[in-house]
Length: 61
Image (tube, rainbow, N blue to C red; front, top):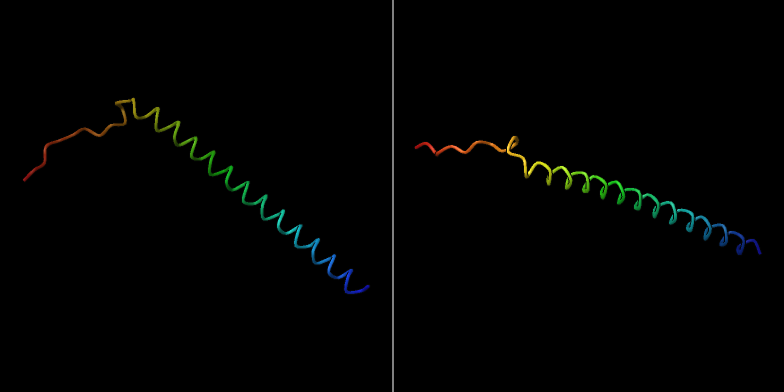
C-alpha cells in the first residue's frame, strides 16, 4: 500500500509539473505573438511613410 501511495504522489507531481511547463510555454508564445503583431503593425505603418526612408545616393568609385 505504501508503494501505491508513493506512485500516486509521483504521478500527481509529474502532472503538476507538466501543467506548469505548458502554461509557461503558452505565456511565452503569447508574448512572442504580441511582439510579432506589434512589429508587423509598425512595419506596415512605416513602409508607407517616406520620413523613415534613407535617401539613395550614387555609389562612389
